[in-house]
Length: 305
Image (cartoon, rainbow, N blue to C red; front, side):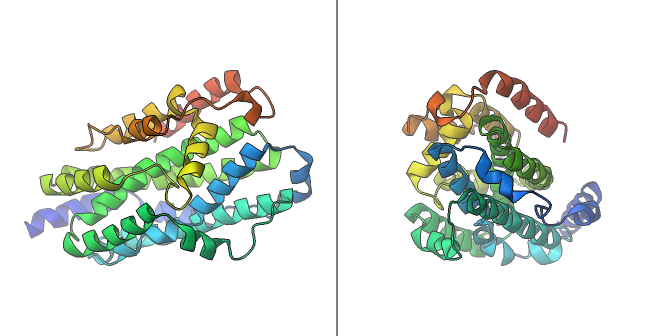
């Protein structure tokens, strides 16, 4: 048993090149941008609300690693701790980029936004934090797979969300920020996906624990740290809810993970809240025809990895 586990860990280290990830990591660069250009391009109130959703979501990633950091996997698997350090560092600067953009537009954020976000998070988010600590303590050998599954689905969703910002807002400075962040989000997604697949494939108990956790607690990225109303708004603004192509695309990607062939929770969430196509008045221009082409290109890019 121990020999088999060692071989799995060795294979994971050989197949995913953590050195390559570390060498390409770093804060997303935005000091070269001309921030004086930001307020010159009109944004709708609905767009600004969505950007605040990104700010809160990207600034909250450090909440999600406490349970994982208490497991043996962090010490026994050579890739995990370096990746988590890179992930948290890069995600922190994603949030800072949105803070900088909003403030340049004239939308104050303030230094207390993170503490306010923590105080205002919903009951579901607080329950999730408790559940993470519990699972990390009770089933430490299986909890990393749950974290990797969550990361796979959320990073895949986030990648498409950035593509949607480019298509639907089309602000020249924001576009550059999103394009730079998307490169990092793609690397994060690849790591999560490969580790989730390997962990889930090696143990039926891990798949069982994962299914229980996902069915009990999964919601779309940002829900909980933001209000339910803001989550519904963002999914409508970015994806056209049930009327758009992204929700089925996310679910199909989740179903590629061992044991998650049943996954339809994004559709269930959208149906419960009746999330449909966003009104054209939410946007400053007609983007939908071009979005079909760029959305297909984004899907092809992420499928190639």
